[in-house]
Amino acid sequence: MSQPTPKIEVIKGDITQIAADAVVNAANTSLLGGGGVDGAIHRAGGKEILEECRKIVARQGGCKVGEAVITTAGKLPAKYVIHTVGPVWNNGTPEEEEKLAQCYTHSLQLALEHGCRTVAFPAISTGVYRFPKDKAAKIAVESVSRFLEKQSGIEKVMLVCFDDENYQFLTYQLNSQQ
Image (tube, rainbow, N blue to C red):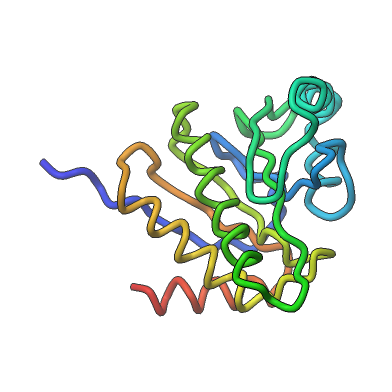
């Protein structure tokens, strides 16, 4: 009997309301909260998330661009929050695209290591970090698809969009890959 094919789903909604084993946070390098998705996750999840982030900062000094760390999900309907730091768009160097792809793969690897079967991602770097939404959508779908082809632990990845534009770009990318 073969394993079921992992599923990628695009959802329009609030990532803080998504029930998943892991919710990914588009964090900054300080891990201490911020605006956008980062602020929303910290507010909704409560002080437990910030307390664990402070311990990580004390231990390793934050999180580098393209890397990921994991904490409790506090009051969120998830087991974990995976904090990843996306690149700031600065004229589109190949390194920026590679760092964004690493955000997805490193987050999925952490999720797998912690036994997560379902993972919800926001559209990383498409807010104040100004990564073009069409390029970010292509990188997100390609990175997640590549990762899921090589493993069997993660059953579903949800790409959660707060805005219509990201939803349209991600839906288009997912449909064009199938």
